[in-house]
Image (cartoon, rainbow, N blue to C red):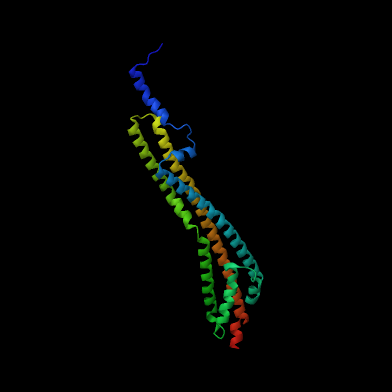
Length: 249
């Protein structure tokens, strides 16, 4: 029969305490529930940031796809138009800034009725440039949040990690032991915050860069459409087929 001495009991106590402090399940959900309130707030904020990232991705993907389809239709219609009036008719069913290019040129031609046509191309070009700029700004709306999440997310996660590790050291001090069973849960919860920060930040950076390239391509297509409108205006000026010539006569 084995008799346990007081020394044996004393040496076993820290192990029993460590076992009681160690959670039975170190799954991400249980680590979240066991984390400090500050770390939990950090994790929830990063999770919401990740949801915002994918929401922006879905919305902007649909918007960009529709806009690129419209601008391709606009370029195809302008390629077949012989006059500015014909271009306006062909673009009548196209909404958005893409369909406004020819209408803006025609509006400027009507406002310039009775004025010599030498400066008409410059005035039309100015209008088209404003439409292009407005379309680019409209496409860029919502992408700024991706840049913010991509740059700030890892640091927010790191803050949660530092806070969790500080709490782990406090737990070590209270338990008077450095047993891994006492240290591991707090460190695991802290590192989970960093992991969630990276999960939120990495897709945000990738999606932001992809949208930047797509928006640049869309703006280039808008520039091509505007150049087509200017060529049509130039041809109409040579033909004297614009309203300003009719009013002057």
